[in-house]
Length: 390
Ligand SMILES: Cc1ncc(COP(=O)(O)O)c(C=O)c1O
Image 1 (spheres, rainbow, N blue to C red):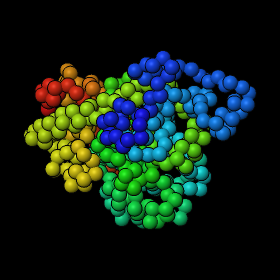
Image 2: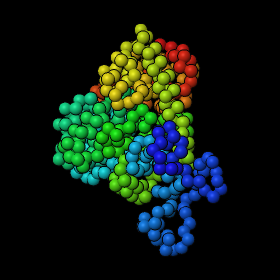
Image 3: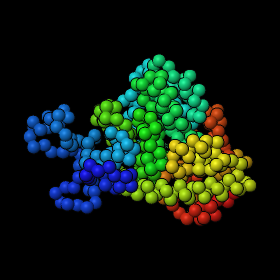
Image 4: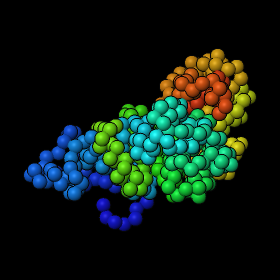
């Protein structure tokens, strides 16, 4: 592609494809484990990164590069590493940026497995972790210590759509120590709605499984940031630990990026209608959606992300029985915990995505038994609304 500064919709379609000698128009899948060298000397030069080029698909592959270049272009980062899942993206960042004795500050309100990774896996290896309220900047400030090396949060959060102020939290962390890595899980917004690096974060994480795939087919993740940390340290971890993205999955995600902007816009428009309907329904106690003016951080959300997102959570009276009854009465919606699909999904976070948290932890962030999460897809929004028997 030429060096002209293209806009995001163009970057998502045109970045990263180096046409082969066959002149293919659509991007090929390089289904190969390893790459052949012209000589033993060339092999040596490639293995030592002295010469650019592919070596072994655990850490380099042209289809993976295609996906990585597109993601980096969309998030505005210098480098991207694709991983086997969203969780392995988080693991790779932690393993590349932390060692025993280091300290991490994270918000309480994060995806279930992300908290388990911080709270048990990392602490087992001697990393200290403190949890704070996402929206309370004073808590972020006072939790930082001399040995704090990483700050982690997602915004909007899964499932309660709390908004973290990326610019403020990044500034607080960097004023304390410029070396701290501010890591933002951008899964719910994607770079189409929000670009954390431009707001001051250092690293962006993705579960590509969600909106980037967009049709619920593959598991994958991505890490975007600078050349030194992501392009070298995280790549080094990937080369050694091999939590790699397969060429097929990289191809699905790269092609998914081509339509991401259209899909996100439509899913957000649909979600806005579903959220509006729920907010006017007498049987609904509370709706969690950043695109509603009633959201406590509506102003921040409107500034930080260009639309409300595609995930709407709501609370009803009657606890688990009432929530299960609404979920089980749906005919169209899929009862599954994935999100970011063309198909709208419905789940009970208390007993699925956040099941491994203690009851106390769940209640602390507001995930109760009467909470239902809908990840709005691309069906007609009226059909989605009519499927909800509240
Ligand atoms: C916000 C968020 N981050 C990370 C993940 C983990 O991604 P994966 O399932 O691809 O490992 C998820 C999965 O639901 C998620 O919702």
